[in-house]
Length: 219
Length: 134
Image: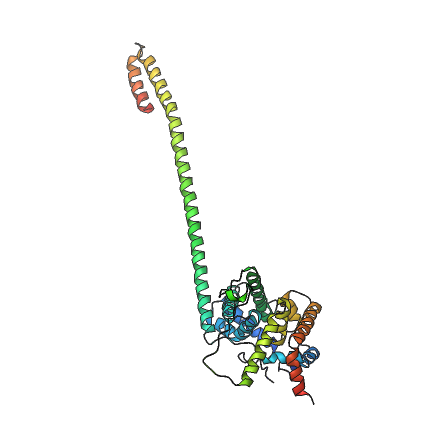
């Protein structure tokens, strides 16, 4: 059964053959083959862009970082040594860029776009940056679905970056524990612990939706 | 339900762990928020950016070559100047010695001319001496 998350990547013929094909493409990229680079980008852009968007929550920033990932892959083609799986090596680049972006954001001083309301009694109120959608009118069910989607994304974004990346790689990119450990530069038991803690945190954050789902699905 | 790749028994995927996670309602709930996909122009923009990086790299390489040529050329010019100065200096130092030889020659000549007995033979020999010395 095809993975519902992989709606843009081609169906894999097998993990090993896919990796062999990736390595062959990298060799061609090192020789200056632009078509090989294009094929590489088209094959992995969904996973790379999707993972970074899930990690940062900002599609515009994710697009820039995703491009940087492929630029780095391109620049390293000449010195790339096929000692590890290509996908694992590429997601190590994703990890480095995303974590650097996190550190940069944590150092940045965030200024509100809107001045605080003088009538609020001196309290610091967060500005409401959500713009109303004037283009379309959604039915209630769609709105509830959208709300649930936002809550899930918020819960993922609220995870510590190591747990967040582990969850995304495991759930959406179907990485094995060994592959995740290699990307995160940690051990397999530590990876399993990260995933366990992340799932427990998500279970608490999304318990409202879990109860609704269990209520609907009970037999 | 497993993907084709999972059912091949690849060592990279542990079916037991995947089944456990797939039975987890939290794990299933995450399927409601799938990964967003990039737009249709992502590949084209990324390719353009890679080409731009390649041009920048080529520019840096040619700049590096220019610097090497500049440094090499400068060193070569400096070496040539040093050699020239050394040669000029050694020429200036040799001049007084040459002058001294000429003066010695004239002194010898003067002593030879003052002797009356050997005037005829000395004149021809002095002439030949002059010719050879100068």
